[in-house]
Length: 118
Image (tube, rainbow, N blue to C red):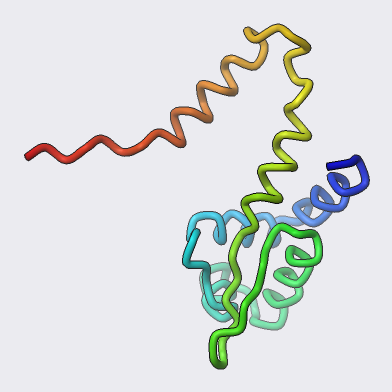
């Protein structure tokens, strides 16, 4: 990822409704959400939601797929991963203690749930 691509993605996320929409799509991976459901959950008019979703798609942060009369939106986690790596790649300058708290927090939020006891 280059600086122009990162800037475009960050610009798309630099608006509260779009940031909320992206986070909502991430929560609903891998199934995604219909456009109308995104609007309902964000409590915004459907045309407003569609505009925000189109900006996320244009930035590469979301994908859309027609399913009958609905359009299903999904977060593009690969693009988000590329952005995250771009932002953090040089964060510690070889000093792991600088990034250790960040990595620990990420690891804890992504940990597998405990296995159910029999």
